[in-house]
Amino acid sequence: MRVTFLGTAGSWPTKERSASAIALDTEKELLLLDCGEGTQRQFFQSSASFMRVRRIFLTHFHGDHFLGLPGLIQSMGLNNRTEPIDIYGPPDAEEMVGRALRMGYYTLRFPVAVHPLRPGETVELDGYTVRTAAATHPVPALSYRIEEGPKRGRFNGDLARSLGIQGRDFARLEAGESVRVENRVVAPSDVMGPARPGRSVVYSGDTAPSDEVQRLAHRATLLIHEATAAQEIEKEANDWGHSSARQAAEIARAAEVDLLYLTHFSSRYKELEPLESEARIVFPGSHAARDLLDHLILQP
Image (cartoon, rainbow, N blue to C red; front, side, top):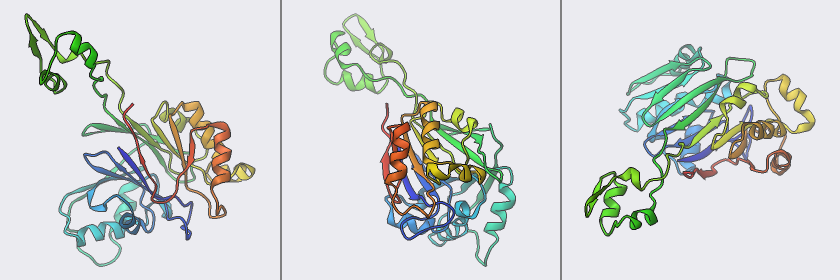
């Protein structure tokens, strides 16, 4: 599972940062979280391919989070895409996405399905689930939790050897096949550790500090939380439905996440080290995301 930050700017792009967009590669498919202006161009500079995007999850319909959608869809068609794409978003998604895709003269060459979601809904997909919570923002807005299903336990080689397993029988057990050793049948469950939880990524989208987002992020592997402003102007940021870096770190600490990436930085901040330092005082596992940064999420 790999996260690629395509855009980390807040409200409008800068020379250093593009508008909000994050690619999440689950190996089976590529998910896109938000699609701000310029997303398709960011793909060309990244390790990810927009032609592999199977689903798009939009947090809300402020321009910096969805205005890249018409260009991305058109570019997919011009590159002979035929595979369908599913777009998810807040309750107003059908109207807003419909407007966006009707702009300009072009022929839609593949099926596009729009799925409005309400806070608290869960979408069951192939090998993972997507849960939603209400973000605290002036317009309808969602936060998302993408979570893999449970993984089988680790293979215990020492235990297998103690039971007389040798040679190719190791691979057979790891593949889920039982093997016979003298008068005993050894099942895979005999040499596997306990099942492990799947990896989980939570994306806040734009939000002031939110108890609902905190609950959604409980013990997530990775929390990606907006950090529009520094602590000294966090009240003003909160009034506009945004968080400071310090507040994002407080959410991460309270939710007991493994790792925090900050994103959606105001254009007033040319350097991100002060925001990162502010967050690390509260939650040491805090990092400021940069455009085109890749992060590999390892299995626990």
